[in-house]
Structures are given as structure tokens and as C-alpha cells.
Length: 267
Image 1: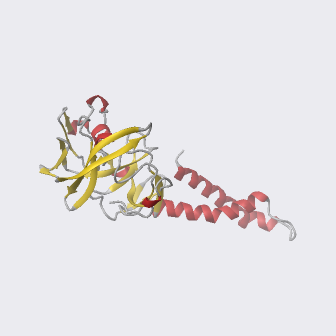
Image 2 (image 1 turned 45 degrees about the vertical axis):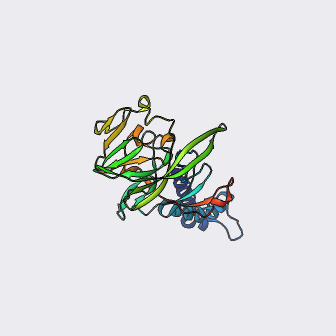
Image 3 (image 1 turned 135 degrees about the vertical axis):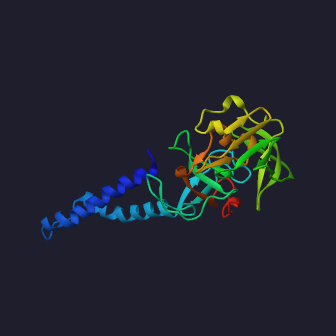
């Protein structure tokens, strides 16, 4: 069950008990009669749950990075904070935008509900905005016909789960004025065609062993992982609709395996 829904149910339950006691039960108790334990607990937990629910729904929400698809930007085990209001104020649970603010920008690292299973949250980088034509060819990006410059930045080696050693090339990619690091594994194919799903908007894409080209539908976004050859992203499952956006990742607040990462901003 969705954690936000669990919080909401607990909020309604404890708040309902508190209101019932205030309006009805308290008046029926004698002067020396104590509150029932369930009333006492509800009144104690209600303000705490309310504060957590409001902060998590409208300000920031914590997440843990479970996979290496965003290496080197994010490492497995990073605990991050996500800004919930950058892209507009949304009603909790139903995720409906009620106050538009900023639009997602190319290069943002964004958390969203996974289109194939909205109960799961994914994190990737925004590559294509609504209306963009995104082409991934020779492990380089073209957006609306313009190549996005990549600058070599040495080698980058890491160990996957299962103690598999992975050698990659690190590059700095420019998405307009936004620059970020990415990894490319020269031994991996550009795309695994057999893993491409049947997704809404598939007709907007063209696939071959050498190239992927997609035109992003209105109200949707094209997402890629920074670890380009170890990321299942929009190349495989399609576009992220606006109503599945959770927020913008901006801060690493803990990594128990590497304390030097604590306090890093997310670029």
C-alpha cells in the first residue's frame, strides 16, 4: 500500500478520535475519570502524523537509491530529499496539480511514479520535454536535431551487486546550459531491442540496433539514467506523464556506506 495513503488513513483515524472525544466523549466523563487509552494515544499521535503528512505531501519527501542506474550522480545507498513543490502544488494521494509553479527543465533529476507500475517510484534525468524529438545514436544525444556535446572525463570503475567489476567511460554532457556527468560502457550495445515494452506512445518512436528516436507527446517527458548502459528508462518503457511526477531531487542527506556523500547537492 502507498505510504502516503497509510499516513492519510492514520491521520483521519486519529483526528476522528480526537474530534469525537472533544465533541462528545469528554462531556460524558466524570471529573475524576481518565481518558481511555485509545483516546490518549490518538490525541498524542495526531499532531505528529499531521506534521509528517503535510511536510511529506507539500514540502520534501525522502527516498533511498536502490540501484546503480544514476551512477555517478547518485550511488546505491544514497538517501535523498525531493522537493515536492518545485513543479507545482499537488493534492496528496491523487497527485492532482492545483497550483502550477515551475515547469520541469531539461537536465533536472526527477522522481516519478513508474509508468508500468505507479506504486513504484523511479528516479532519472529529464532529457526530452513535451514536443522534443530525442535521438540516441552512437551513445550520444541529439535533441531537436542538435547534438548535445559530450566531453571525455577519464575512466570510471565500480562494483555492481554480486561483486561484478564494471569498467566505463565517464563523460560530461551538456544539455543546453546544464552540465552533468554520465557513464558509457563501450562493451554494451546501444539498446536491447528485445527488452523494449509495448507502451503508450510507442508509435512516436523508431528503433534500430544503432539508434533510438522518439518525439515526446504533449504533457510527457523522456527520461534517461546517467549510467546509460545500465538503466532501464524511457528507451524501454516510454514517457512519463505530468500527473506521475513526484518532484525534483536536490540533496543527499545520508549514505551509511560513504559519509563523504552526506550534504552533496544533486546536479
